[in-house]
Image 1 (cartoon, one colour):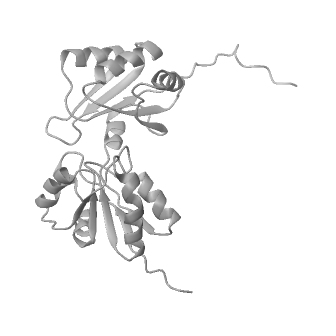
Image 2: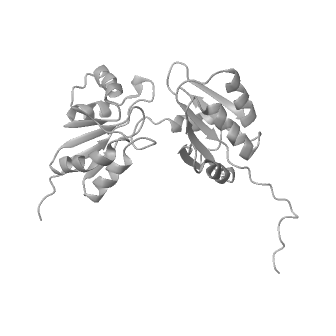
Image 3: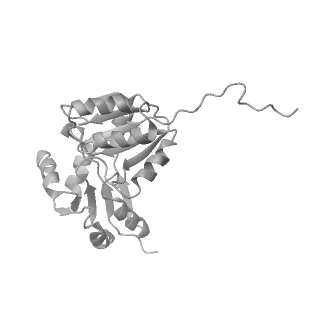
Length: 242
Protein backbone atom coordinates (compact mmCIF):
# COMPACT_ATOMS: atom_id res chain seq x y z
CA UNK A 1 0.00 0.00 0.00
CA UNK A 2 1.27 3.44 -0.91
CA UNK A 3 2.27 5.47 2.16
CA UNK A 4 0.19 8.56 2.88
CA UNK A 5 2.41 11.58 2.28
CA UNK A 6 -0.22 14.16 3.18
CA UNK A 7 0.68 17.17 5.29
CA UNK A 8 -1.04 18.12 8.51
CA UNK A 9 -3.50 20.76 9.70
CA UNK A 10 -2.84 22.34 13.10
CA UNK A 11 -5.52 24.30 14.94
CA UNK A 12 -3.61 26.71 17.16
CA UNK A 13 -5.33 28.66 19.96
CA UNK A 14 -4.19 32.23 20.46
CA UNK A 15 -4.61 34.47 23.54
CA UNK A 16 -8.04 35.99 24.17
CA UNK A 17 -6.34 38.96 25.78
CA UNK A 18 -3.06 38.57 27.62
CA UNK A 19 -0.23 37.67 25.22
CA UNK A 20 1.46 35.66 27.99
CA UNK A 21 -1.22 33.00 27.51
CA UNK A 22 0.44 31.84 24.29
CA UNK A 23 2.05 28.41 24.78
CA UNK A 24 5.64 27.48 23.87
CA UNK A 25 4.29 24.72 21.64
CA UNK A 26 1.95 27.07 19.77
CA UNK A 27 4.85 29.43 19.03
CA UNK A 28 7.00 26.55 17.77
CA UNK A 29 4.27 25.20 15.49
CA UNK A 30 3.58 28.62 13.99
CA UNK A 31 7.28 29.02 13.23
CA UNK A 32 7.58 25.57 11.63
CA UNK A 33 4.51 25.27 9.39
CA UNK A 34 4.52 26.14 5.70
CA UNK A 35 1.51 28.45 5.96
CA UNK A 36 -0.61 30.19 8.60
CA UNK A 37 -4.31 30.77 7.95
CA UNK A 38 -5.58 33.80 9.86
CA UNK A 39 -9.09 35.13 10.43
CA UNK A 40 -7.77 38.70 10.17
CA UNK A 41 -4.19 39.01 8.92
CA UNK A 42 -3.85 42.50 10.42
CA UNK A 43 -4.77 41.30 13.91
CA UNK A 44 -2.64 38.17 13.63
CA UNK A 45 0.35 40.12 12.34
CA UNK A 46 0.57 41.93 15.69
CA UNK A 47 0.70 38.60 17.55
CA UNK A 48 3.21 37.03 15.18
CA UNK A 49 5.47 40.06 15.29
CA UNK A 50 5.44 39.98 19.09
CA UNK A 51 6.77 36.41 19.04
CA UNK A 52 9.11 36.99 16.10
CA UNK A 53 7.22 34.55 13.91
CA UNK A 54 8.02 35.24 10.28
CA UNK A 55 5.82 33.03 8.20
CA UNK A 56 3.43 33.20 5.26
CA UNK A 57 -0.05 34.43 6.16
CA UNK A 58 -3.25 33.80 4.23
CA UNK A 59 -6.71 35.14 5.00
CA UNK A 60 -9.30 32.53 6.04
CA UNK A 61 -12.55 33.90 7.46
CA UNK A 62 -16.29 33.24 7.43
CA UNK A 63 -16.79 35.25 4.24
CA UNK A 64 -14.29 33.33 2.10
CA UNK A 65 -13.88 29.92 3.76
CA UNK A 66 -16.36 28.21 1.44
CA UNK A 67 -14.17 29.21 -1.51
CA UNK A 68 -10.76 28.55 0.05
CA UNK A 69 -11.34 25.18 1.75
CA UNK A 70 -10.86 23.12 -1.41
CA UNK A 71 -7.53 24.73 -2.27
CA UNK A 72 -6.25 24.39 1.29
CA UNK A 73 -7.10 20.69 1.39
CA UNK A 74 -5.26 20.16 -1.90
CA UNK A 75 -2.18 21.86 -0.47
CA UNK A 76 -2.35 19.63 2.59
CA UNK A 77 -2.68 16.54 0.39
CA UNK A 78 0.39 17.73 -1.50
CA UNK A 79 2.39 17.53 1.73
CA UNK A 80 2.25 21.06 3.21
CA UNK A 81 1.79 21.69 6.91
CA UNK A 82 -0.72 24.44 7.67
CA UNK A 83 -1.81 26.15 10.89
CA UNK A 84 -5.18 27.79 11.43
CA UNK A 85 -5.56 30.61 13.96
CA UNK A 86 -8.44 32.93 14.78
CA UNK A 87 -8.32 36.48 16.11
CA UNK A 88 -8.50 35.12 19.66
CA UNK A 89 -9.12 31.78 21.32
CA UNK A 90 -9.50 28.35 19.75
CA UNK A 91 -10.38 28.10 16.04
CA UNK A 92 -13.86 26.73 15.23
CA UNK A 93 -15.33 27.84 18.59
CA UNK A 94 -17.65 30.59 17.30
CA UNK A 95 -14.91 31.25 14.72
CA UNK A 96 -13.99 29.82 11.30
CA UNK A 97 -12.60 26.31 11.30
CA UNK A 98 -15.39 23.75 11.21
CA UNK A 99 -15.70 23.61 7.41
CA UNK A 100 -11.95 23.10 6.98
CA UNK A 101 -11.76 20.43 9.68
CA UNK A 102 -14.69 18.55 8.15
CA UNK A 103 -13.11 18.70 4.70
CA UNK A 104 -9.81 17.40 6.09
CA UNK A 105 -11.59 14.52 7.84
CA UNK A 106 -13.31 13.60 4.58
CA UNK A 107 -9.97 13.77 2.71
CA UNK A 108 -8.16 11.70 5.37
CA UNK A 109 -5.82 14.59 6.17
CA UNK A 110 -4.36 14.49 9.70
CA UNK A 111 -5.60 17.17 12.11
CA UNK A 112 -4.19 18.23 15.44
CA UNK A 113 -5.81 20.79 17.74
CA UNK A 114 -3.47 22.22 20.35
CA UNK A 115 -4.85 22.90 23.84
CA UNK A 116 -4.92 26.55 24.79
CA UNK A 117 -6.92 29.69 25.37
CA UNK A 118 -10.67 29.85 24.97
CA UNK A 119 -12.97 32.43 26.54
CA UNK A 120 -15.80 30.32 27.89
CA UNK A 121 -13.82 28.06 30.26
CA UNK A 122 -12.56 30.80 32.63
CA UNK A 123 -15.95 32.54 32.45
CA UNK A 124 -17.73 29.32 33.41
CA UNK A 125 -15.35 28.53 36.28
CA UNK A 126 -15.48 32.13 37.57
CA UNK A 127 -19.28 32.23 37.47
CA UNK A 128 -19.89 30.22 40.61
CA UNK A 129 -22.70 28.45 38.76
CA UNK A 130 -22.76 24.65 38.35
CA UNK A 131 -20.14 23.57 35.81
CA UNK A 132 -20.22 19.79 36.02
CA UNK A 133 -22.63 19.84 33.08
CA UNK A 134 -23.14 22.81 30.77
CA UNK A 135 -24.46 23.85 27.38
CA UNK A 136 -22.43 25.96 24.94
CA UNK A 137 -24.82 28.18 22.99
CA UNK A 138 -22.37 30.65 21.42
CA UNK A 139 -24.05 33.66 19.83
CA UNK A 140 -27.86 33.73 19.94
CA UNK A 141 -29.79 34.27 16.69
CA UNK A 142 -30.17 38.00 16.13
CA UNK A 143 -33.57 37.97 14.44
CA UNK A 144 -35.10 34.84 12.94
CA UNK A 145 -35.48 32.11 15.51
CA UNK A 146 -34.30 34.20 18.47
CA UNK A 147 -37.54 34.04 20.49
CA UNK A 148 -37.94 30.33 19.83
CA UNK A 149 -34.38 29.67 20.95
CA UNK A 150 -34.84 31.68 24.15
CA UNK A 151 -37.98 29.71 24.97
CA UNK A 152 -36.04 26.47 24.48
CA UNK A 153 -33.23 27.69 26.74
CA UNK A 154 -35.77 28.63 29.42
CA UNK A 155 -36.26 24.88 30.02
CA UNK A 156 -32.51 24.08 30.06
CA UNK A 157 -31.40 22.77 33.46
CA UNK A 158 -27.67 23.02 32.73
CA UNK A 159 -25.64 26.24 32.88
CA UNK A 160 -25.74 27.91 29.46
CA UNK A 161 -22.77 29.75 27.93
CA UNK A 162 -23.68 32.64 25.63
CA UNK A 163 -21.38 34.99 23.72
CA UNK A 164 -22.61 38.55 23.26
CA UNK A 165 -21.52 41.91 21.92
CA UNK A 166 -21.14 44.71 24.51
CA UNK A 167 -23.48 46.80 22.36
CA UNK A 168 -26.29 44.22 22.66
CA UNK A 169 -25.69 42.99 26.21
CA UNK A 170 -28.33 45.06 28.04
CA UNK A 171 -30.92 44.35 25.35
CA UNK A 172 -30.21 40.61 25.53
CA UNK A 173 -30.47 40.61 29.32
CA UNK A 174 -33.86 42.27 28.88
CA UNK A 175 -34.97 39.56 26.44
CA UNK A 176 -33.85 36.87 28.90
CA UNK A 177 -35.88 38.53 31.66
CA UNK A 178 -38.98 38.57 29.44
CA UNK A 179 -38.73 34.82 28.87
CA UNK A 180 -37.14 33.52 32.09
CA UNK A 181 -38.09 36.07 34.74
CA UNK A 182 -35.98 38.47 36.75
CA UNK A 183 -34.64 35.96 39.29
CA UNK A 184 -32.71 33.58 37.00
CA UNK A 185 -29.04 33.59 38.02
CA UNK A 186 -26.43 34.89 35.56
CA UNK A 187 -22.74 35.75 35.49
CA UNK A 188 -21.27 38.15 32.93
CA UNK A 189 -17.51 38.23 32.37
CA UNK A 190 -15.81 40.73 30.10
CA UNK A 191 -12.25 41.45 29.00
CA UNK A 192 -11.04 37.99 30.04
CA UNK A 193 -7.31 37.93 30.93
CA UNK A 194 -6.96 41.65 30.20
CA UNK A 195 -6.17 44.50 32.59
CA UNK A 196 -9.80 45.47 33.19
CA UNK A 197 -11.29 41.96 33.47
CA UNK A 198 -14.59 42.04 35.33
CA UNK A 199 -17.18 39.47 36.41
CA UNK A 200 -20.63 40.58 37.53
CA UNK A 201 -22.82 37.95 39.19
CA UNK A 202 -26.42 38.07 40.35
CA UNK A 203 -29.97 37.75 39.08
CA UNK A 204 -30.82 38.82 35.54
CA UNK A 205 -32.43 42.01 36.85
CA UNK A 206 -29.44 42.86 39.09
CA UNK A 207 -26.88 42.32 36.33
CA UNK A 208 -28.98 44.25 33.81
CA UNK A 209 -29.21 47.18 36.26
CA UNK A 210 -25.42 47.13 36.72
CA UNK A 211 -24.68 47.37 33.02
CA UNK A 212 -27.33 50.04 32.52
CA UNK A 213 -25.29 52.13 34.95
CA UNK A 214 -21.85 50.99 33.72
CA UNK A 215 -21.52 50.77 29.94
CA UNK A 216 -20.07 47.34 29.03
CA UNK A 217 -16.92 47.23 26.95
CA UNK A 218 -14.84 44.42 25.46
CA UNK A 219 -15.62 40.79 24.69
CA UNK A 220 -18.55 39.39 26.68
CA UNK A 221 -19.23 35.86 27.95
CA UNK A 222 -22.49 35.22 29.77
CA UNK A 223 -23.11 32.14 31.91
CA UNK A 224 -26.83 31.67 32.49
CA UNK A 225 -27.92 29.51 35.40
CA UNK A 226 -30.02 26.50 34.51
CA UNK A 227 -33.68 26.22 35.40
CA UNK A 228 -33.93 24.97 38.94
CA UNK A 229 -35.68 21.66 39.45
CA UNK A 230 -38.73 21.73 41.65
CA UNK A 231 -38.06 20.04 44.94
CA UNK A 232 -40.22 16.98 45.42
CA UNK A 233 -42.16 16.43 48.58
CA UNK A 234 -43.61 13.23 49.89
CA UNK A 235 -46.97 13.95 48.26
CA UNK A 236 -45.41 14.17 44.77
CA UNK A 237 -43.99 10.68 44.94
CA UNK A 238 -46.31 7.91 43.87
CA UNK A 239 -46.58 4.92 46.08
CA UNK A 240 -44.80 1.83 44.90
CA UNK A 241 -46.90 -1.19 44.08
CA UNK A 242 -46.70 -3.80 46.76
